[in-house]
Image 1 (cartoon, rainbow, N blue to C red):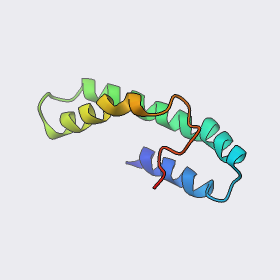
Image 2: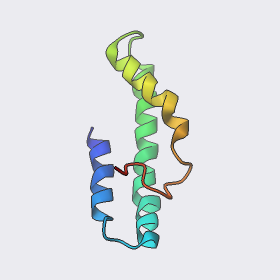
Image 3: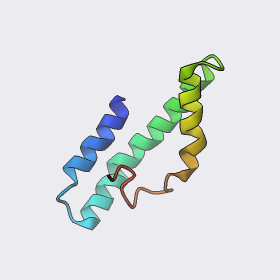
Image 4: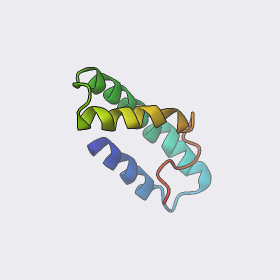
Length: 79
């Protein structure tokens, strides 16, 4: 949850930025956070027992991971 919180913090910081500055912030700071989150999910899933709620939640997230943009051009956290 802390990783996701950091992503939301970045979006809050960028709220009044220009489009270019927002894209730069996402490229430099948000994208590495997303990559780290993905790695954490993969590692955690490998150590999680099958069938449990945690495994199901991680599987759900990983199954949908490809739907994220390849680069953080737009906010993945927009409301």
